[in-house]
Length: 426
Image 1 (spheres, rainbow, N blue to C red):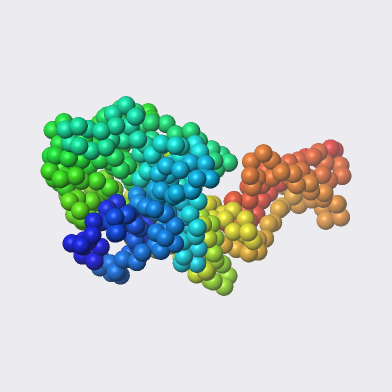
Image 2 (image 1 turned 180 degrees about the vertical axis):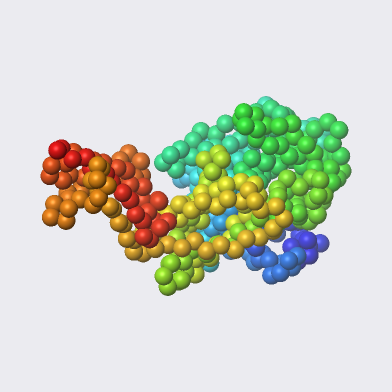
């Protein structure tokens, strides 16, 4: 890669943000790994790398970077000499991008980190599953290749957002000697490096997919880029056509053959606006796969103009949960089943700051409105389901009636109407 790769230094482990505009990678300088970042100026053109000085100055070594899907979190591996620390080996850290600057890094702590080596984290698009490698205590080194070996693990967050005890990925992903896991944008395709029979030599890059039954498919070698050298740390551009990876001291890029492309994507250029004045809104967005119920992407505090960019898959249906303090939670359905050839989609999501709820209370027998001289008492009770309320209606000389009110439906229509029928006692 021009600009990124140099003849003077070793570059390794590229990581891309979900929109493909930010790359973080490691570079060997002064006998230590340091982290650098570069931004895409135009297709195929990247800015001169900038050191992540706050991280590089704090740690003895920092490497194995992984950007979150929204580009606002950076997971990485580091070694810090701190006798008072709970864990002092190579550990996984995370920091956040705040006002264009990376915050102080925090050690993920136990149970992800231990007194053993943990490194090269890979975070899923929904920020809830972390893949990483831990030292292989049973097969520490491959004598023939002369390389250290590792086991691939994953840890998942519980409902409270706490990382759970890591578990080793099963065979056929873990075999004897694995490295550098990278989970792709779909949250199901895992790429990693491994020493295996019939390889082209050294570490080759393999790909495996998580099956509906929870098992992993037989890893396939990416022979269109594998070489006799060590090939590691792949990541794929949002268009699904370009792969970036490490080989022979540098970061390379290659075009993925059409028959090997796993992702038929469409890029959504979204904007969240106030419906009346068309002004942008800063919100939180949760995108859920309607078919699986799983989150595929999360955005925290979009820009003030309400714009955001995300890559989705054609043929799927998504729920967009848009959350903002003054507007509660809005759920929009995005159906991509009819998009066949399009490569991008522009869409505005409109939020209403004022809603008009009209309820027609009528006599069940006559189908006429309840007389205006009668007092209608409405009691609104919460239900166990978020944003759904139970409304009870009481009118003299009528049986009590009730109905459910789903605020998600109300918020989609600023002039929502509902009819409630009451049965007369006479």
